[in-house]
Image (cartoon, helix red, strand yellow):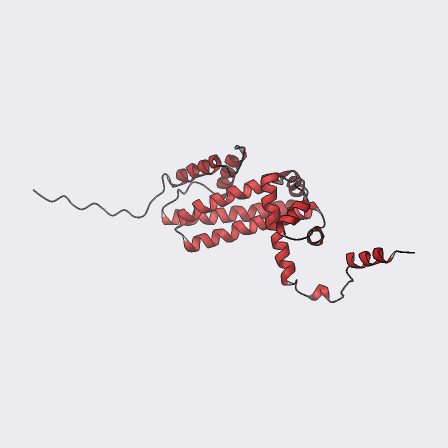
Length: 220
C-alpha cells in the first residue's frame, strides 16, 4: 500500500496530460522562464565551463531545477538552445546596430559582441563539439548565419568608404575567434584590445568618402 504523502508527491511531480496543450501557445511565464534559463546558462558556461551545475543555473535564473528539466531534459538540449540563442542575438544585433550607428561603428560594436559569443562557445565546447560534428545541418546553418551577419556589416562599411574591401565575413570571424582562443580569458582586456587593433586594420586602406579638393592657393 502506497503511503499518502508519497502518493501526493507523485501526483504533484507528474502533471496530467492536457490533450489541448499541443495547440496552445506557451504561457508567458513559461516563455519568460525559458529565456531566463538560457541567459543564466550562457553566463555560467562562459564563466565556469560546460560542467557547471544545472542546479546553479536554475538558481541563478530564479527557478527550480524541475522547471529547468521541463524546458531542457538534458544538458545537451540546454547547450543547443544557448548556442542557437547566441546566433540569433548576433544576427539581430547586426541589423539593430546598422540602423542606429554609422557602419564602421556598428562593425566595431558587433566585433566585441562576437568576443562574448566566443567566450560562451568555448565554455561549452566539450558538449558543443559533438553536437556540431554529428549534425552537419545545424553546424552549417549556425555558421552560415553568423558569417552572413558579419558580411552585411563589412559590406555596409565598404559602401560607406570606412572599411577596406578585401576582407570577407568568414575571414573576420576566423580572425576574431583566433584572437579569443589565444587568450586565457576571452572577455579579458587583452582580448578586447586585440580585437580593437583588428578593427583598426579593417579601416586601414579603406576608400574613404569622396575627397573634396583643397582650395586653390591665393595669388600673392
